[in-house]
Image (cartoon, rainbow, N blue to C red; front, top):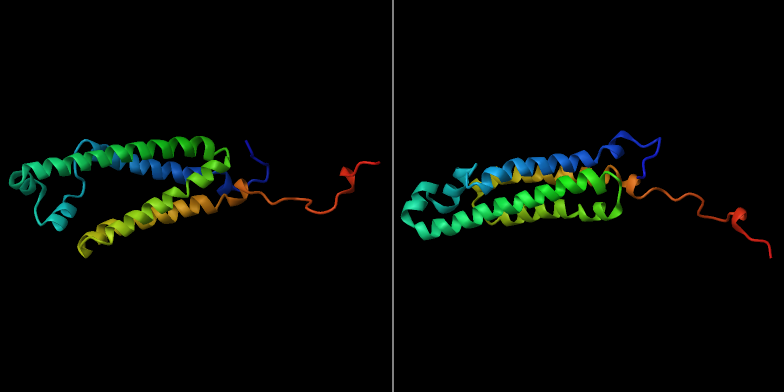
Length: 166
């Protein structure tokens, strides 16, 4: 563990940012995995039909939608679990691999914004604000503890103590 006495508060506890992001994703993933759509208006904006109308008018398509919807929830559960575990262990201990791996998080949410930009503008207003918050939080969680992961080198220059006598 790389804790130092003069470690700043935001360096010491930056891992909590990712723990919170993971917990929020987990909370959203559980109903998603169980098939409960927490934003049915989004489905109606995109498809022009409510979820029930979609289910009645095209049951096979609804089954496909439900498969991908619940599968997305299952993926979110796995993502949240890994985020929580890595933030509470490796990232908290300032292991560099975790810092590099967590750059995936703002990239992931940026990808969702790019994907969402192809949707009707009415649906973008419900997607973009939370995604933007996650991007900002994850960037803060990466940049605030930068010196914890990459401390300044001391004594770059000439040090006569390390020269051996011939």
